[in-house]
Image (tube, rainbow, N blue to C red):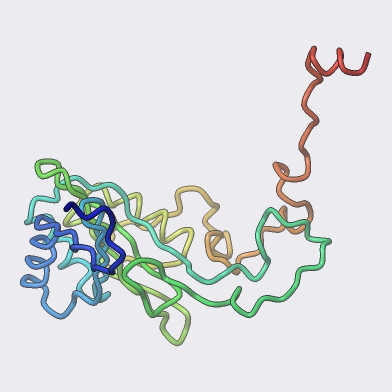
Length: 224
């Protein structure tokens, strides 16, 4: 007799992604304990966090594996904004939420407020990886990490933008001039504690300045 249903519990067979497992194993063999954490969604994507002092070495190791297409490089400030969300009306009272100040660094974890992120792709194997590294602040508040220019030339302006918007220095970069802001501009606009005064004066226009939809012919017929 065929079994119509199974009321017992069984564990799902884990999905194996040999390609991404191989990439991580090779990266570990190249930079050793500098691989701190890994998050993988089999068949979908891969995130690897490495130590800050191995940032360039990790890029070199991935380039040697065949990841020769540079996608992007930037930073993330994981601190929740002390000003709330830009969608809120600044005149409204906001209930305090203790969890709203908790720093969460996303996939592969982290231990610092600021992190570097870079994404590269192996076009032949059709696989990409997001590399992450914690960027600790020195006692004077400065931050630095090795430049990737010698590994991926396309990282040039990405590092300039990250330096300008987050205040992270890139050791070995030949020209960290501002790209968007005046040279004497003070502060780093993409840090969460940088006050966006326009949003403090007026909430996000897409929330409060919504125009009513024009009446349709059906609506006019209903009114009659």
